[in-house]
Structure formats: C-alpha cells, structure tokens
Length: 309
Image (cartoon, rainbow, N blue to C red):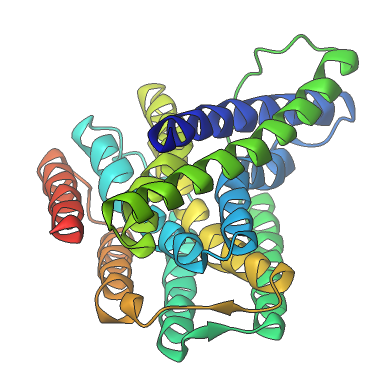
C-alpha cells in the first residue's frame, strides 16, 4: 500500500501540475498578460508547486527530513539527471541571454542553502527573508529580460481557449497537487518505517526524483524543439525556487524548520558541488556536450547507490 500511495502521489502531482499550468496559461491569455510575464510567474511557479505541496505536507506530518531531503535531492536530480539527459540529447548548446544571470542566482541561493544547513534551522523570519529574496530575483530577472528583449517560451496549451474550461482546470489541478502530496508523503513515510530507511534518504531519492519529473518533461520537450536555452533556464529557475521558495515557505507556515545534521555531513556538499559545476561551466561559456552529460547521469546514479548503501 505504501508503494501504491507513492505511485498515486506521483500521478496526482504531475497531472495536477499540468492542469494548473495549462489552465493558468489560458486565463493569462484571456487577460492579455504578456507571455514573458507568464513564463516568469505562472509556468515557473506552477511547475514548482508539487515540491511546495510535498514540503508543506511533510512538515504537517512531522517529517521535516522528507521536506529538506526533497529540496536537496531535487536540486541534485535537476542538475545531474535532467541537464545530463538534455546534454546527451545534444540540446544544451543553444544558450539564451539570461543563462549567466540565472547561473549566478543559483550559486547565490546555494550559498544560502549551505549556510542554513550548517546552522541547522530556518527560522520563520529567515523564511520571510528568503521569500522576499526570491521575489526580488524574479522582479530583476523580468526587468532584465524585458530590457534585452529576451524571449521566454510559455508553450501551447492543449485546453480549449475558454474560461469555463480554464478555471475548473486550475481548481482541479490545485486540488490534485495537494492530494498527491498527501499520498506521496504518507507512502514515503510508511516505506521508511517498514524497511528501516531513514526519511532523509527517502526524501533525497524517491521524493526528489518524483518531484523532478515535471522539470525533466519540460526540459526534454523544450530541448527537442531546439530551445536549449529554455531547457537549461527551466532547471536553473527551479533550483532557485526550491531553495528560497520551498524551504522559505515551509519555514513560514511551519513556524520554523529544523534541519537534521545528517544533511551537513554529505548531501548539502553534493548540492554545492553539482550546482557549482554547472554554474561554472555556464559562466565560463563552456558547452555541455554529450560526454559531460553521460558523466552527470552516471554521477547521479552513483550518488543514489551511495545513499542506500
């Protein structure tokens, strides 16, 4: 039953996220909101709602290690697995104008993550500061993108262009996201208890991989359309939201968030190293070729094996 809960949770999270984003895109179009603004808000935040829902549900069920592990593991999966796969497919060579800006933001957010993990706690006030920093980053990114004429691919919606379809899609999508989060955390906690696996490991692997599937799908679709810059930008933006938005939001709603010292021994350094690697390559304008992509994928698989050993 625990495995079934996890699988059902994954399905609900992905289906709910898709329904919410597609409905919001149609509503934004009806309201004549610029596509650039939609990409920076509706799409980016919508694809990160599964991570937020899981984190809040984990805190609610007194399983903070699943919440923190999900964020750390998701960032590792986004860089090593998602970008690695895109690089193997040869779609990471067409970098857009905002890549350096986003790479710098990822490193800044990762330094914040390193600091709070070493401290061992995210207080409610620190959480508020993280949300403010995230809002500031998005405002600066939007202004900068507008100034240089940067394009953001929003994607085509499969929904009919009708408000009576878009609004229910958003409502049902949002409900499925929170329902999926409940099932996923319940199943993951049960597996941890039944098989003697720590909640931290479950969060770093199973939960993280499941919540990274939407990013993998978006990245592959963008890459196969020849939009390599969109593929990389999606991953970088997701990692910034995971750190500042997800952990910050969980700390605010949960009245603070305790972080186990287990993460300070290894996992936060893996996040720091992988994010630093990709940010360094992008800032240095080095191409993410197929060889690099394969190395990243095998590195991720090795990390998962080490977790369970």
